Length: 323
Image (cartoon, rainbow, N blue to C red; front, side, top):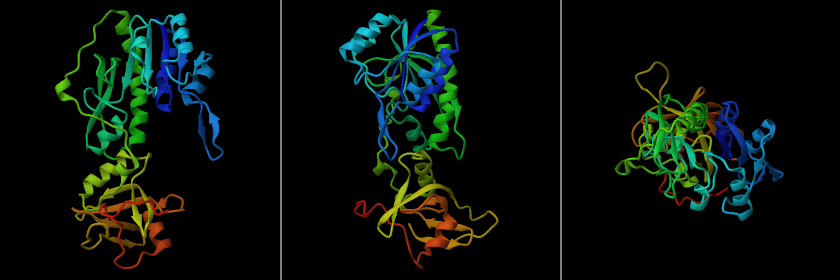
């Protein structure tokens, strides 16, 4: 089939490469315009644009897919289907109608669970132990189209959102290729169950703030689900403090353990940094203090020497960024 591929971030690159190597004719790639990146804020092409150029595929970068010049070019390309992975812009209805078999999206959840921009992050923050990938036909309503294929994927106990997304991107690439074969064979898609919908809105910085009155298990979910972006955080002495990795302290396990800590209360020894929560204690494995590089929690505690009784601010504080 003639395919136009739409995608932007690194998570979309495995699917582009898989389709390009599958025997289909990827006639063009649609991606978001070059964006400022790095300290110099230089305009940089998207990872998908870079991969497409390496593969020798035409790259289209309209400001918006409704732009007349792009719509005309897509019509002239006459794709049988458009494949989409994290493109990053809504496709208008008249453009959805151009390819005979529509636009087929690879989504990183088991739809109708976690419709929206952050399915992997929200699944981890919710404590899901199983997630997956879904291919479905785009319709005007967000992530609501009929499903072609799904594959369930177990979540590893300590997996972060970044790690899980990388794994789903690789798994999903093969599912997307198989979906193209299904479409060629005329296999029908199946409507979603709208009564089972859960939503996955974009994770904002405020969503990543640690509420030390919450149980330790819940805080670990937030830390894993917001890693690497936007990154779980709290305040220490009025400044932003990031928690990059943590685990629930098991008092029954061998080794030293902290005393009875109240929410946000800090305790450390030469090899550990702990913080109290509303239920249980967190060992802060990797952290990043204000103006510092990422380091182990123990190294931070040795360098900072928090005063006896020091604590991280809880969510009841005013939330201002006092950097």
